[in-house]
Image 1 (cartoon, rainbow, N blue to C red):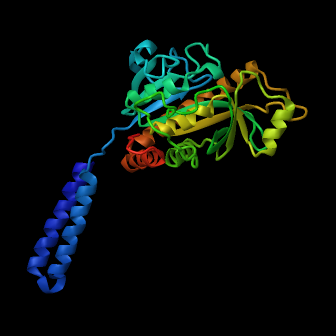
Image 2: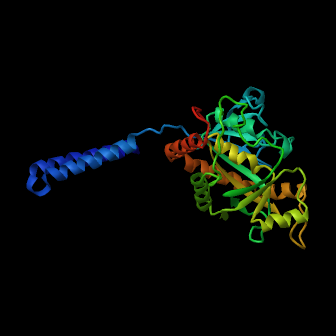
Image 3: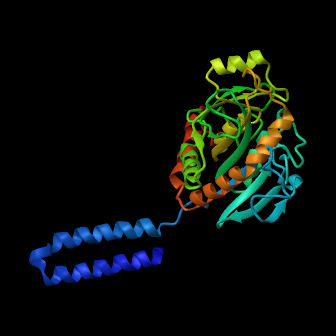
Amino acid sequence: MRFYFLLLTSYRLLLASKLTIRHGSIYGFGSFYKIALIQKKIFCSHSRMPKYQVKIGIIGGSGLDDPNKPIFSYRSETKRENATNEFGIPSSNLYHGTISGVDVVLLSRHGSGHIINPSNINYRANIEALKLAGCTHILASIACGSLTESIGRGQLVIPDSFLDRTIKRHSTFFDGTSNKYSGVCHMPMEPAFDPRTSKVLLQAAKDLCLEVREGATVVAIEGPRFSSKAESNAFRVWGGHLINMTICPEVYLAKEAGLLYAAIAMATDYDCWKEYEENVNAGDVLVVFQQNISNVTDLFIRTIELIGIENWDQDINNLQELIKSSNVSRNVSC
C-alpha cells in the first residue's frame, strides 16, 4: 500500500511539473516549488522506518495465564531459569509468538498453576525479563473487586490511577542495588498508566462493541487476605473504584523500566462493603473471571493489532527522557 501511495504522489508531482512548465503564467514557479515541498514531506513521512520495533508483553492474571490455552500460538519458549536477571527469576516461562504479525511475549504473573501469592511475586524480575526480551509495551489483565455501585460483576474497566497500600514489596528498580538502574529516580506517577496505550484499549473495545469503562482508581492491597468491611468502606471514601492485589508495584516498575503499560481490569465481586451481596471469596472470583475471559482475550488481540499499525517512537523517547530527568543523581545514566 505504501509503495502505491508513493507511486501515485510521484505521478502527481510529475504531472504538476509539466503543467507548470507549459502554463507558467497560470501555475507559476512558486506553486510548483510548494507542490514539490509537500510531496517531499509526504514521501519522507511514509518512508521513515520506526526506530523501535513494537513488541508487546502480556502479563496474564487469573484465567489468562494458562500456557496450555494461550491467546496465541507461541513459537518458542524461554524457561524461567533462563530468563533470570539481576532481580531474580520471573514468575513463569516466557512464551514468544505473534498476533497479527506483532511480536508478543506472554508471562504468567502468579506462575503456572497460580502457585505464587501476590506478596511473593517477583515483580521486578517479571518486568525486567520482558524488557530484556525486547518489549516496548505491556498489556496486563487483573481481577478486581468493585468498590462502587456503577461497576458491576463482569464489567471491564481501563484504570488510570492507583492507591498503593502494599507494604512488603520491592517498589523501585532504583534502590542502589543495580548498576543498570543507578542513582535516585523520583518518577512522576501521573499519569500512572500510559494514556495512549489505554486509548488504544478503549478503541479496541469500541471496535468489538464491548462495554468498557474508561478511567478508575485501583486500590492495591497487600493480600493474600481480602479486606475487612471497615477497610473496604474506607477505600470507598478515599475515592477507590476497584480493589486488587497485584497492580502495584507492577504498574510503576514498568514505567521506571521505560515500558508503555496499560491494563484491563475485570470486576468479579463487590469486595465486602455492599449490603445484601455475597462477600468476596476466591472461588467466585475465578468463576466470574472465567465466564468473561473470552472478552478479555478478544480485547487484547484487537488492541495488539491496533498498536502494531502505529508508530510509537515519540512515546518511547518521551518516557526515556522522563526517566533521565527524574534521576536527581549527577552524571548517572538511567
